[in-house]
Image (cartoon, rainbow, N blue to C red; front, side):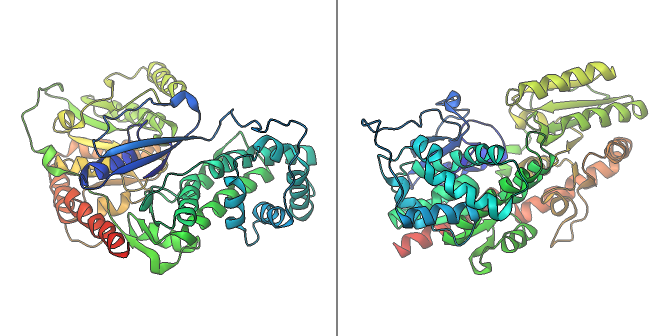
Length: 469
């Protein structure tokens, strides 16, 4: 199982999915290849690891240990013509010679320092510059290309353990590892995207302030070529909903390889157990199950709640989830609450969602990017209606795609404080609607999004690879 930036270090939707998948198949042994930023996260796991998770290998994309291993410091290795052509094809994104590159980086004496600072990379960068970006300052372009390609080269240098099936929970660097493993070990490869990796990175780069001008395009092209590599080498490519599958095809994936495999949760966990009451009577409780990070847009949530509370005084907001992933952003959220002078906002930190959801009257998700949020399905399991922004598959979960159960909440536009405010007020003032929406959501969950359904789908996929073997 190949994961980037999530399991087992971060609690969240994708991490929970991986954890539940490993636990769901005790008959299989799992190895996790975890791609993280740097060594500061080494071994800092947020999950109690299942017994059938037998190994964890870590890849650091911001690693410092990339100096030459050669003892002869005077020796400067040069690429063969075939290797140079493959390197140039990578930078130019022209029929990339991935097999040659995989073989090149498998060499134990290859120094990333000598490669990135050497004449072959310089020559390839200059060729790319002259063809595509001659208006840029070359020195800036050269150093940017070095920073862009270091994470990829570190990925290509990784010694991937042998397995029967590589299951990548994204394209990107995870997909590169999967494709490389498939070529080296002749194993099978599954790509399962919860969000469309290329589109998510593109959206982030467009908004980013740390990269400007042509370099946004250079980074976007980098992610596109990595995703294409993963699609081209996969045996099966799954997505959570139909529109995501269409995006994969648009990005170059063979339609014959694609299939929709919806998320699933264990609805039995949410059978009412009469939990200890932490929510006051007489208040309307809104639950936001999320990580306090920019992508969840907690600031818009706070602003919207402040306006809603002016109209419905007995509203209370529960922000339920970890606050340590981006401590700077979390601090800014706390400061915003103080600046607005809004009361009745509780930041719980990490909690057992089962203990809290039954006490909520509704839940809310104001994300700027999502796939198919597990938190919405969990709300449905507790018969609670949902307010969510129109990202990922939130529209399908709330309004339905192929059923007649009816609306299960209210959809709003991203970062639209007025719409989010009005949605809170509407549900707060209408108990009958809240109850009906909650029941509609529960029916939708039971019809299509149970954990047992998802497990059966992947059991068939894994079994098919056993038959090929």
